Image (tube, rainbow, N blue to C red; front, side, top):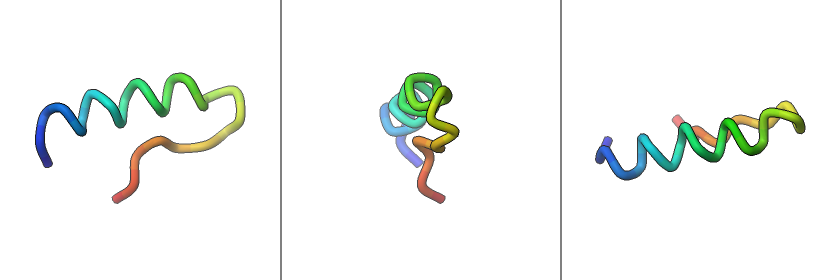
Length: 26
């Protein structure tokens, strides 16, 4: 997985953490 997508995955997961939603799509 590209590094840019990994960073986006982490940032999205952090932003959506209050919703209990995972930004990572495996």
